[in-house]
Length: 224
Ligand SMILES: Cc1cc2nc3c(=O)[nH]c(=O)nc-3n(C[C@H](O)[C@H](O)[C@H](O)COP(=O)(O)OP(=O)(O)OC[C@H]3O[C@@H](n4cnc5c(N)ncnc54)[C@H](O)[C@@H]3O)c2cc1C
Image (cartoon, rainbow, N blue to C red; front, side, top):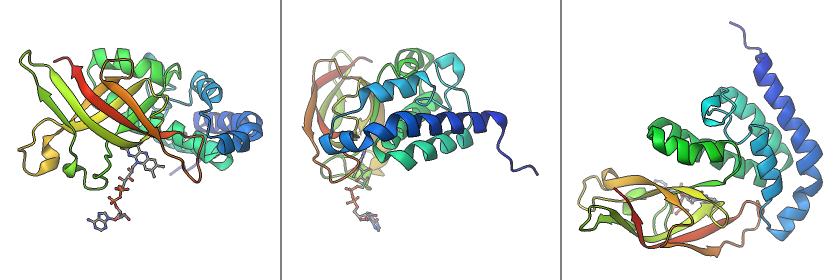
């Protein structure tokens, strides 16, 4: 069996290493101290294909495999954990689920701009009183008379929450389900939609350029 990396895997590893050492390293400490989100470098990473490494080229990604993703992640994280965290949320938490379970329409609208780095993605499961045991979450998406889902609740620890354009949100659609986690559904959320409110930013001790915040939903209507 051949355990060597392929030419493609070596190429993305080297590209990520060059970018990390030449572009991220000189600014990493400054952004970590200020806590400012490094939007410019994140967009450049998108242009280089680092924001959707496993996303097929047809959806704006690099169309590579998981090993290629891990090799690139290692190079970015070696230099700055904040850029690594932003990159991992975009690639795995956001793009992977959407690619696997999204409709074609959702992929066109929510996957392409994130995989190309034009927009920022986030993933929102955790709540102030609900962490590992996600079935205890209190947020709700309940149908109104028109059949649309109306989302209410407070989510916490949303990585890239202060800047995200689109969010994969997990919330309860069936409060009577047993076990509880079977009553949770995923929604694609637009940050510029009424009822979407960015909450307080967490003052973290480290990985500070990877902004983390609460997000509140107040009668956010998600069409059927
Ligand atoms: C920097 C940062 C970024 C984050 N980004 C995101 C994000 O983008 N999106 C998001 O949804 N969430 C995010 N989170 C939240 C994170 O996913 C939660 O912190 C995590 O799910 C754990 O929840 P908790 O903190 O409430 O801890 P708890 O669930 O209360 O766990 C506390 C401790 O108890 C242990 N424990 C829990 N249950 C059991 C059990 N049954 N048996 C034994 N031990 C147990 C855990 O291992 C842990 O050590 C982020 C958190 C941080 C710190």
